[in-house]
Image (cartoon, rainbow, N blue to C red; front, side, top):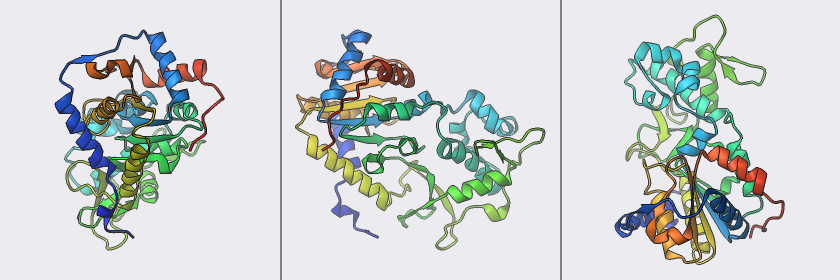
Amino acid sequence: MKQNYNELPNGYLESINKGISAVRQFRGGMTMGKLSREEAVAKLKKEIETADAIVIGAGAGLSTAAGFTYSGERFEKYFGDFARKYGIRDMYSGGFYPFPDAETRWAWWARHIYYNRYVPTPKPVYQDLLKLLENRDYFVITTNVDHQFQTAGFDKKRLFYTQGDYGLFQRVNPDIRKTYDNEEWVMAAMEAQGFVRDSENVFQPPQGRSLLMRIPTELIPKCPDDGSDVTMNLRADDSFVEDEGWHRASAAYSDFLRRHENLHVLYLEIGIGMNTPVIVKYPFWQMTNDNPKAVYACLNYNEAYCPKQIESQSICIDGDSGEVIEQFLKIYHCPEAKSVS
């Protein structure tokens, strides 16, 4: 396995540096653009059809639009027992809860991983987005960790998951830069809690009896190499393991940007909030500003805006990402497409 990652370009750090530059440069205020909704959609259609390359930057808002909600009915259905016993209000905060023991903590994480990684989204938003990109030269950078781009059929070689993957474990010792697939463990842990598969082979809470909120001690996940403790491969601090696959994807992203930096590039940001804007949002602004042929498009719910400096190169569409993509696909998607180089 390749260990000298310094030999590879690091698209992640390159993007963050661009994002930091943007913070310093864009101080003239923000705008939601001057285009009407109809004009903005028409312009985005033209850009998708004519761009030499499309860079998709996706955040949590895209998965939320696809039905991966972390609270409400979905949370109550699969985590209602945890909510009642521990006062947890949503899946996100549950990931930080100080559970009384490892058996309970890993029971929680088995459910969290399963329902946000190993089942498809309730709505076909990712599939619809892929249809819009049919035969286009694209690359995806995402802060999402639910793996839904690949599940929907996106080319694995055109994806960069910057913040990890629910489907991977890493050793607690971050000096070992290696990750491990957890699918087999997740399925066993779900069965151990009493979940049963439905007619579509998806685990559901059983009818008429309670779920267990702990897994057997012998099911607590361990490193398959040496039996040491493992944790989730999610970027929470500097212990996050950037493994070989992560570095290959980072390098591929860097290479894609370099090959297209002076061409007609569409930077399409979908569902990115302000938790980690320096990874996608700010770099997209900076790369658009640096290239007069580039166009920045922001598709988001109540957060569709851009710096005034790049307003003439920008498209801002406020709305539910899934609904807008579906509408756009029905009205504007054409079978003709530019061949991928």
